[in-house]
Image 1 (cartoon, rainbow, N blue to C red):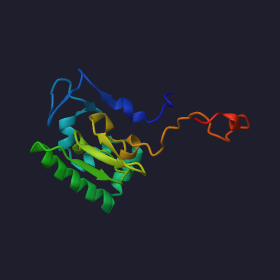
Image 2 (cartoon, rainbow, N blue to C red):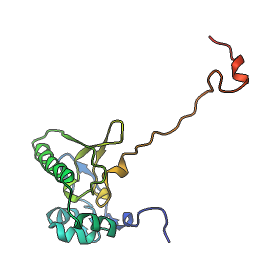
Image 3 (tube, helix red, strand yellow):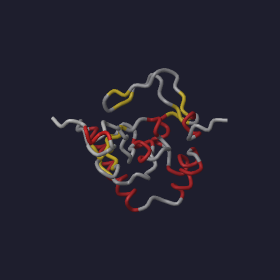
Length: 160
């Protein structure tokens, strides 16, 4: 069995390498999620799309979107219109529990990690995940040299 995390990551298949070129995606090797092409997923109604997602995401979406997630979705749709005009728009949000939907692909979202906004470029493989998975709230620990008074012997470190 695979215990390395989310099981639905292996649901994506590619016939050839997928490339994103500006506003539109190249058609060579369009990604498929559970047997459906990305273009079909975007045009699918929400009820059909929900049935394709894993159980936790399906349950979350069946209960309906809270007002803050609806507001984010409205902003993302406006950003999509601006992106079609050639503008590079970053939508900032604190909504880390928003499920990534097919209509969000190719947008850049600033996800708050507790201190600042981390830019997340949405790609097709992220569909079904949540935004918070791609913006870690914890900073990596980097240990340096001990300071004065850290140990008994560091009291004798010469000061420059």
